[in-house]
Image 1 (cartoon, rainbow, N blue to C red):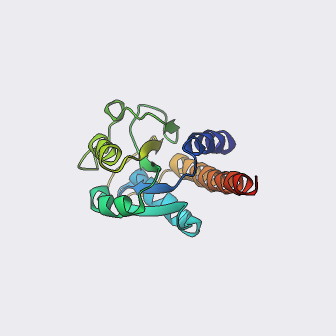
Image 2: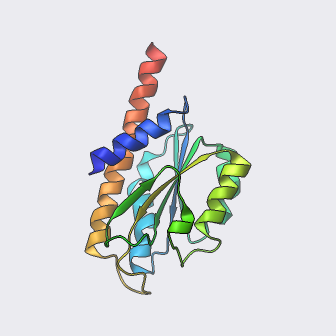
Length: 175
């Protein structure tokens, strides 16, 4: 599963020549499976590479990081969040043209749709959604086994994606 996810992400991101990526991890660690985004951010902390990839754990206030994203000027913003797309708990959604009206996120204001449109229009970054179907977003609960397993798949996929991008850029530079 993670290999397919990584392959699709790397191919999409490399379409824009020399890419730079912000991985924007959204969620509330106090609300069970909504901790998906922050969990992924912590696992990717060492992935940061200036000019290529930045990982931002923005908690429940992604709008507070718009200026940071603007300063970085990424070609792509990968939004990592728990989203209700009516799947089974732990299902992963990967969308290169996210239709945020098809997913429901009740714990974040403003909505992902508004955030994504703002980033696209004001910064020019392509938005990619990597979401997981939560089992629960109840206060004070821990992440479900399904979402924890999905988190590890996403972490592996994102690490592999960045590795593939680095290799492709190195090959281009040597050619």
